[in-house]
Amino acid sequence: MIKRESNRIVCFIGDKETGYIDIEVTDHIEAKYIFVDPEFRGSDAKDQLIDDLKKLSKEKNMLIEATCKYLHKFFSRRHPEYLIK
Image (cartoon, rainbow, N blue to C red; front, side, top):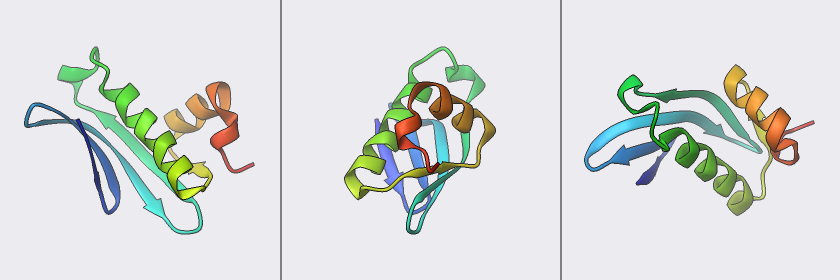
């Protein structure tokens, strides 16, 4: 389950927080950091978080500035259409 907080997208399995993406929304979405609890790194928590980040981008009609190295690499290679050029 995904829950959005003011500056985070959080993934839960049951009632346990499994990971999050720190974000800041201004005139674009800054994706600052992604974390998945080591216990859940084989699950789809990361994919759920990234999917919701893409969904948020579409909902707000905003591009993403991925200051997180992992997210920048991911979006550059797989979904460059979401990134600020």
